[in-house]
Image (cartoon, rainbow, N blue to C red; front, side, top):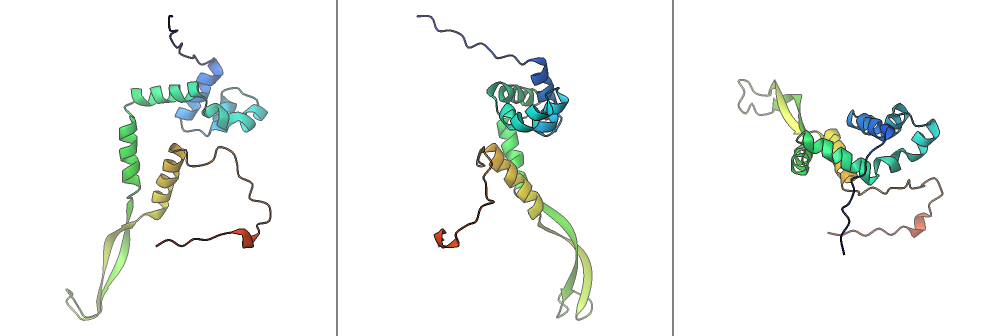
Length: 154
């Protein structure tokens, strides 16, 4: 028996425009609208369209052409999870340690963890790792606190 070659799925013009919009950094809904999809289709099916295998394969191809391999992305993601920022700080030495006069104070710049940036990188990592559910979770209903079990480990 001959095995059929898997034919590469080609994108239609709107799908190519959609991918171009995603590559430009547009949210999926906006990219779909600019690609010519109706408002209803864009708002209701953008997420599903972005997850289609042929769309994902095209995006992966474009990324690799630009040198954005999985290894490089993971490396940058790892760097982002260790982000720091420089802040101005008043350094106070109560006993004059290392300063010309006792109880001296000097202005300096120090590195501190940048938790907002780290959170964005962590959010991105969760999205890339598919740790978020595909469907929206409804949390609008009442919650019975008595049914929540909390385990403390450690």
